[in-house]
Image (cartoon, rainbow, N blue to C red; front, top):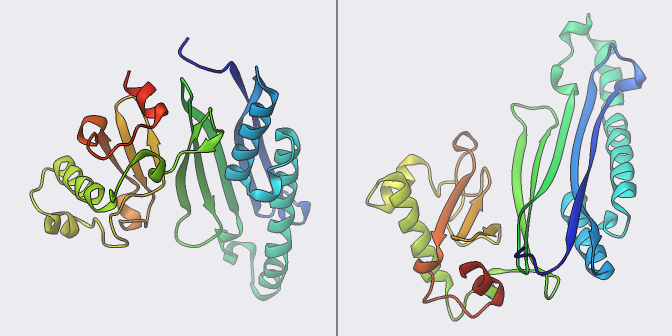
Length: 257
């Protein structure tokens, strides 16, 4: 067992549908939650600290000091109540103005999904992934994935500055461009831009990354560097290409062994 700390995880699932005015003939909101949290640990303080990070990242800071069960319950109640508060007055007005229910837009049906899981747990590293998607009317919903790389020795998230030394950003940006060119089998940045890359934002090292045995993967959500239609973009750079920039972070040392 390569895990340095005895940690166990559990999950809480919610699938809640609530109709406007409590009437099943009317549009509804649907909330799906699958929250992974630390259920047992050889160190109680560590368990509490991890869950604080998980709850804050999944639901927001005001939920971070609750128990997992309490946070899920409160978040669900607030989602339903906010939906009704926001949509019922508009729907009521629409009902009065329109001839029939068929004329009333389907955009009144809202949807939200928050699903999290432990992507990697090895040595003193825990990588936690959150997949989020939401629809609140309009042409399409929005979806994104975020990652927490937690150092279990310090109980703090690992940032790029914790991994790299010196003035690394420019070099790392070049590596990202080169890797993206290799992934897309093109020879110039211009060709990538013609395909749609770096048209909605600059390609720079993002703090939304995750560590693995092989290296570091930078994750760009829709609109970060590409139009919605292209979906998210991942750029993986192996450790051997980063050696000259990496500091002596013990978590990376463990990963590479």
